[in-house]
Image (cartoon, rainbow, N blue to C red; front, top):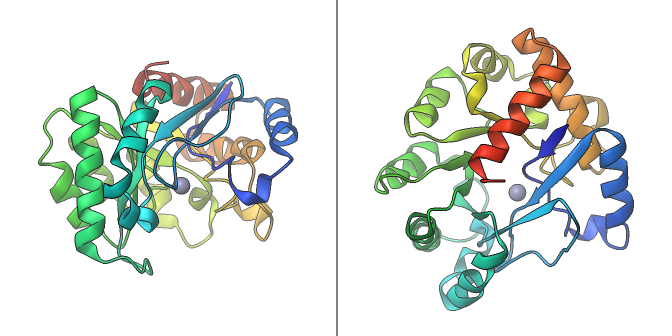
Length: 243
Ligand SMILES: [Zn+2]
């Protein structure tokens, strides 16, 4: 059984077809899904074995502080905080506001002893420095796309590593080499649907069923069976999200 730990089932691409998408995932052995929040609060989806995170994405970080209560109200139905993090690539919101939003969510995670889901683009060093200020915090660096050195820093921080479609992209040899050497007990799988489809589905709307392609890729990289990869990554995710 596979667990898609990062899937935006509430995205407009899945409007009116969420049940179909979840059924298709099940047919491909993807039996648990976690939806991280984009807009402040909790994603509005209620389906068995679909779990939620409460939080606010860096792209909505200018709305975080005035919607604190919405995020806090989501805690009782959430298994994680996020997705939060930093995006210094093309995000129109300034660094200061992004950092305020991130720090609020780190405090929430620490206070409630909940894992945090981190988004990171062109901001790895800054993000690591902020996370270090919160002893005892854990969670996942989602859509990991770096090399061995960054992987080690994440492991040393007691965080998990979210692996998705980027593992399958031709140019990402350094990423595959990091995964090959990295500790299996810290890897969890994700599609980031509807974004980042695996190489063989590029140009399509990504969906959780495609997690099977990602798992197959990792089984080749790690030289383990698909069953082993499924079992270990699902156990890791269950441990992280306390399921
Ligand atoms: Zn996301």
